[in-house]
Amino acid sequence: MILQAPHDDPPASFDHPRALDLGHLSLTVAQSDWIDAKARNEIVGIMAFDLSAAFDTLAHSTLLAKLRAAGITGVPLEWFRSYLSGRNQSVLWNNDLSKTLPLNKGVPQGSILGPNLFLAMIYDMPKQLTQNTQTTSSKVMGYADDTTVYVKSKSVEHLREELERLANKMVCYCNENGLIINSQKTQILTNAREKIEIKINHDVVSSAPTISLLGLEYDTNFSTAPYLRQLARDANTRAALIRRLSFGMPNCLLKPLANGLLMGKILAAATAAIPIRLCQNDKPYLSSILNDIDKSIRATARSITQIKLTDKIRSEVILWKAGLRSLTEAVSATMASTIWKARKEMSPLGCIFQGKSSVKNTRSSGSDNLCQPVPGHPELAANKLAQVWNLMNLSNAKTLASAKVSAREWYKQNAKYL
Image 1 (tube, rainbow, N blue to C red):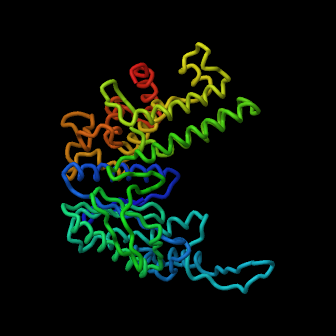
Image 2 (image 1 turned 60 degrees about the horizontal axis):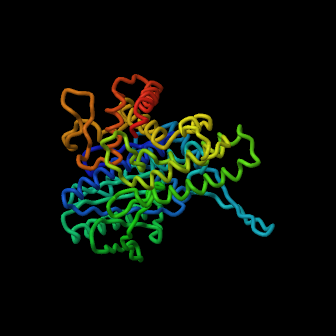
Image 3 (image 1 turned 135 degrees about the vertical axis):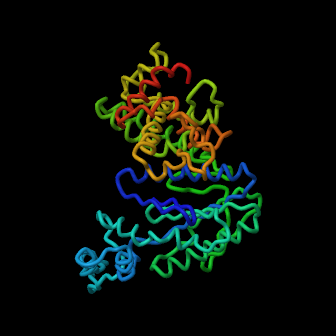
């Protein structure tokens, strides 16, 4: 994952089992930037590039040159050269096998080194895209082979010029590094009232009402409302499927199925997308949609336990018997883990919650509490994370396990108010 300011801060790259979590955290940081700019009457343009067969088109010679430039020489460099060379491929079609041809491009997919080598190949992309730009507000985000740039500007014309310039730089960078842009799948989103069109290669890409980033869908207000509406429909569909399965599947299998099929879907991007209510004073935001998602969870709990609506049993008890958690409990626990790791493990993306001069009001003076990165938007994911940190006293948690305990204790004490 790469999230870089144009000229000052170095990019941060990640490749481990929690990479997607970091990807969603980077979107949380970016969303704060978008809404903060919108509040200052600036226009934001987001452009998401799609690369075709990115892992298969990397030139070995260029990759080895970049590794050498990064300081990898001698025997280690020869290891990489040996790893990439000597590979061949052939095609079997209708029982006819083509002749074998050598592979001088691409990195092996499904391997441990493949993603790392791809990141090494595109490590210089943010600097190449944003250098010599007229604005200092251009930023680059990346996850695997998905690259997104965004620009903030005071005028639509200047925004269009900057996006056009970034698109041209992206085309040049890809041509130089053996990458191919699929302009048909490239997306543009802006909060401008008029449609913006950008020429990429020989195609013209127009701004759309929504944009999909890492499975999350944002609208022109930079909210995740489109994603949440679809999530509510998906949760209802999965709850109905589990109910049908409950008539012939034992309880011991239904519980893990529900946690994987339903809760896994709901919590996949919860930190960046689900604005749960954390206290009585919180104003309801998309409350009807969140209620629908929570109803799907509770309906699934009844399917697992075979408890009917007419039975006089509290829903909390039904959830406990089914091995499930309510939407608020599950999402608040996920948020607690995310913000704790971002702060305590010094995640580079935790900078939004630190007292830097480039971020306003990120830290309360003389206190371990965090202020909301974008005041006035309580529904914003970054603000919710700060709220979770404060309400659960996560600054006192020394380990991730203790942070999870704090989240559980907080929910037990406040469940009746939420």
